[in-house]
Image (cartoon, rainbow, N blue to C red; front, side, top):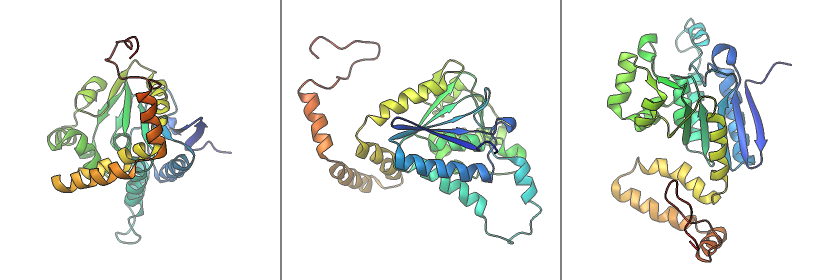
Length: 269
């Protein structure tokens, strides 16, 4: 029986989805997208947060499977619907604007479509081996997995254009500076850090997590006044008995306080 293209494991409240094409640097083809979509939908039903990582020692994903893409170029234009591009958009939107938070654990090549997948996740943890690039200009193609929206929102037009036009490659540290990742950890530690974060996220109130994932990204598409109106509506809609209990626990000193980085909680705080 062949190995699954995307592995799935439920670890308590978090789902672990692993890209499993290490022999081709986890290049993304149509079959992998189908498996990833299936895993994302399953995670949404079973878990409170999820981690997307890659099997193998070196790379997260080198992006689009160019061999498969080249094989499609011989097809007669218009002979069939453009299902493949739609498949990328649908799958990545289920991650970026779905119901649960996704954390990606990055290493090595996080390039092209691999970067588009990472950009669809809510938290990105890179290890020191990670490098970022958008080589579409050199390949004669264009971003097709939502990168023109998701990556441009992270980088801004000027930086994304620089990557695409010049072929510039960014290190993990450079990626953190320009918002491609929020954490950089030593080599080989991104998966453990991503799981640590996912477990913490899974303890949040589910309705608040949903609002952050599904509503907050949409607010950026609205005018100032419409954004404030939606904020007011969502603030009311996430109120719940669980939220009241959490506030009560904090007021009664049963919840951990917020402390400065590196500081311990003050006595009685």
